[in-house]
Length: 79
Image (cartoon, rainbow, N blue to C red; front, side, top):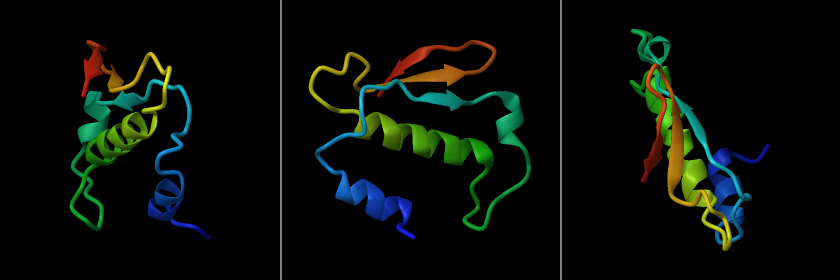
């Protein structure tokens, strides 16, 4: 099974498409449960959203460099 890191490296420069990552930063994501690396669910959600936003840097993508947040006050955030 190919790891996420290997999949990203193999697609470097190709992008994964024209998308706008949605990142859940609502209160339920900041719970006290920590994973092996010390990260909470929100840390992981933010990291994956940043990764997706970076990989969507393909020519013609109007959403490049942006993430939409899911919370009480959702917003489109430039990165």
